[in-house]
Amino acid sequence: MLQAAPPTDAYNCHGWTFTGGEKWINFPDDVERILEDNGCARVPGGGVQTGDLVIYRKSGEIKHSGIVTAVDGGGNPTQIESKWGAGGRYLHAPGDVPPGYGQPEYWRTSRPNGHLLAKMLLSQAEAWLWWLWFLMQLLQWIIWIV
Image (cartoon, rainbow, N blue to C red):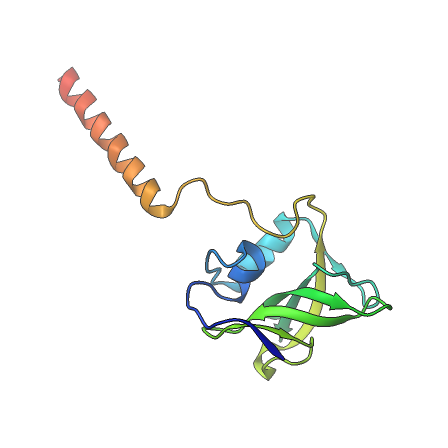
């Protein structure tokens, strides 16, 4: 196992997998929805490619995610990059994860631009400022009419 990036609380494993480390994605249901919305399909053993996603499940619930960074000649993953909680990002073998993460399964998206989500045009702060400006404009319009 090799540390690829230092510890940070700026993003979690799902945030690394789907936003390149720009956001947190908190809930397993969100990951299920992302997989579905992005046209992801399960990849059978022996057909995994570099860049595919790895999803770890325990008792059917998504616990962890990462990106396949190396495969052998038979299409079997040999290295994953994933973020571990508030810890760092690590390059590791598929089975070298904490036991609570469960078993790996592999996914591939049919999207031409890959597994990363489209960036939001506005940050939350910018969105709140826009709404505040809009409400002030509306209030001025109402005062002008009355």
